Image 1 (cartoon, rainbow, N blue to C red):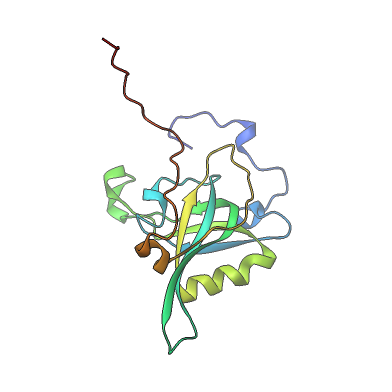
Image 2 (image 1 turned 180 degrees about the vertical axis):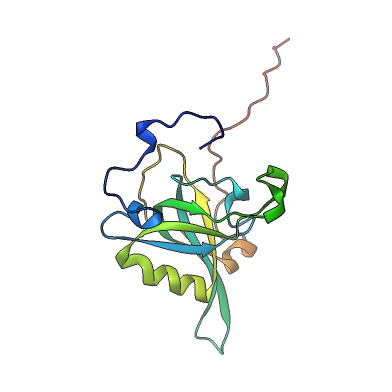
Length: 171
């Protein structure tokens, strides 16, 4: 709550709610923190309440003479951000110039998906992709293989919008 801002009833937890994160975890979910940096954490633009997809980038064995293949796969979709871990310098007196970048994001994950997330974080690198405010879609999880990217085996995706140049009048 900002300094001198009014405290509204809608900003308060219901009577009997335990303080802290534990009172905000829905039934059947677990709060799980993942490591982030500027790139994997959407340039530190995430806020509690935002929605993300969780992607893991990892090397897997191809089974051929110990060769490895790098893959990137969406492992969780439409996951809510519960908290972003910011730390401050004790002498900073909450000056924004002294805020340290977050090193973790806490996500609300369905309990059956928690082991998958922990395994992915142990075996690979977790990246978060922020969703639009109204995007609740659940598609087949996308997968990309390192060998496909370099060979150009997949067609170039169509951009979500095209910038067109004004047409010159016919003479």
